[in-house]
Length: 182
Image (cartoon, rainbow, N blue to C red):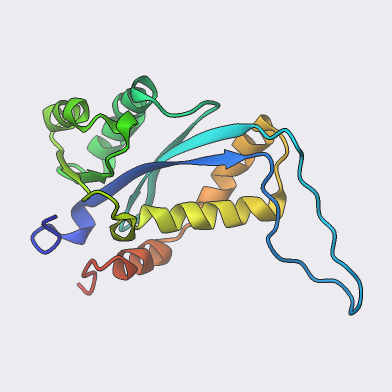
């Protein structure tokens, strides 16, 4: 990956994550000698969150109450990512991993025809993708609110994504080895 030749402010990372109705806090406090209790539903439901992250923060996001496949990812590219990038990040370089649903060979012409470059991450290299940190912060935020239904998750995704600041994004880019000192 040509990380040294592309300015970090021109990079946009795409990825997806699953959010389920069984998210609950990982840690709790209780008075000394007492146990802290929590619960999660046994039959969880899932929502897939697709998103884009740039050095300025969250670029766009979309939720679907299903797993990601090529038609879902294609719709995300055509209806959400490309129009948003045209408006806010023209000429960006889009970076994504090798998930089968991304179909890099089919995604490349969509992005290039729209005026964007596509740069796939090396396989098994999530440490190079700052969006992974964003998913962690998103899930931590959702763990505190413990949404127990699909509508509750979809209602709380926006406020959870709003917690991501440009300073967060800059720190995540630095943590992944991108030089953002300018």
